[in-house]
Image 1 (tube, chains in turn green, brown, cyan, blue):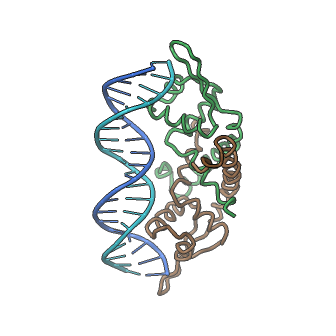
Image 2 (cartoon, rainbow over the protein chains, first blue to last red):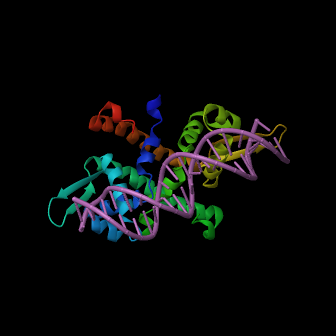
Length: 114
Length: 114
DNA sequence: CTGTATCCGATGGGATACTG
DNA sequence: CAGTATCCCATCGGATACAG
């Protein structure tokens, strides 16, 4: 019974202003350094990037590889386990694309951005 | 290009403390009155129920049917368009259930609720 | 380079009272 | 019955400075 009410769990893990774009970048590029991610997401601050990555890492969706060199080098990637999320992300993306069109139908072009 | 980065859209529509449980109730029961929904979700306030329903209605996921009687009667249901979300909700639910088990594997029983 | 700490304003959601 | 209005607090996220 309670086992059938857990899509909030998925939602909670994906919630966070920058998690979607971080996931998208990592899915597209495979592996990225901290600074690469930061450069590829112009408006994100180090604090938020670090925080959101840490949460994704806790949930084993993102893998963090540290190279103990000077200067430090840290690489992020989608973990093997995290790959299992990609069909859902893809489905959500497809629905989102269609939905923006649907909103335009309903309310017209000018309000579709709401 | 930009058309491929819209799963945030889906996320935004589903975000809201009570939307998942509202959707679940409506999916299970088909059609429910405002007061039925409120009774079936013990801790929700009228303000939040009304607000979250209004947002779901704006996105054409929930249908609102008003019966102009005294006392007023309003029934809510998942719209036809909204049905197209259910495979995603189901997929998210399944992933969520599996993920809670995964967290238990990773961190043990006592931390799986985090 | 890869972060953490602090402060602070914006937003989300709860309690309560009021209304058509 | 089915909401809305108001106030208030907790959490989230941005700016900036500091650190290993």
